[in-house]
Image (tube, rainbow, N blue to C red):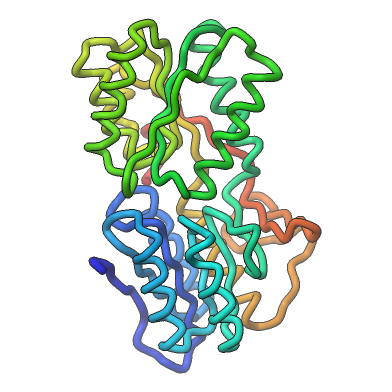
Length: 315
């Protein structure tokens, strides 16, 4: 499956696993680092295992393997809930706590969702930042990851909603998808969008892994400054394109803290400790809110990355 597991050796400790959408990109590496720090602080084992490409089929294999290992808790960044939902139930029947983190499966039996930010806020703020760059008008194309990715599709829906209610002169002309969030496919899709829509004013790279391809396509066409590129990318991912003038904004959150919070929440679940309306997590400079009705543990507000602050982060 092309994945890896990072764990401590003391089998007497609680074992908390996280399945990212893929490994090897700065965003999920930051979540891994945060999870490892939490494991050290909280005296638990952290198992981080994923595939090198975004694949729901691989997530199912990994989930099934973790069930057989009898871990105490599993968090998953869902790619396709229709594929993983039966295995979430299987894990729970085996006495394993299962929850989502980074990407939800609200139609599943997951116990709760560790959310990086509210989906609505993420969709709205991206559109607002893009609109400011293109003077609230023009054609916009979207390049996303897998067509089944719950979080990406939800953000796109909120982008559409924001445009419909506030920016009537902005038009989403097309939405393209990439297998496994491939940067190479993203480059090709962005090139095709620029060719088909010569008046294009903006390109949105929804998956972090698609940002390099989209940005490179605009750079290669010599249209930096003419076509605004924006997406959900880590500072490490977007820095080269901000330095070259291709990107002016990226939307994200503190991925390191999200990884830490994921392990913290897993330990709370295994120990049967309920979340408070506001939770104080060691090392965080802000409370973490819990919404009981939606069963969402919220990291905080979205982060807007700019050329002025891109060097302030380590992920």
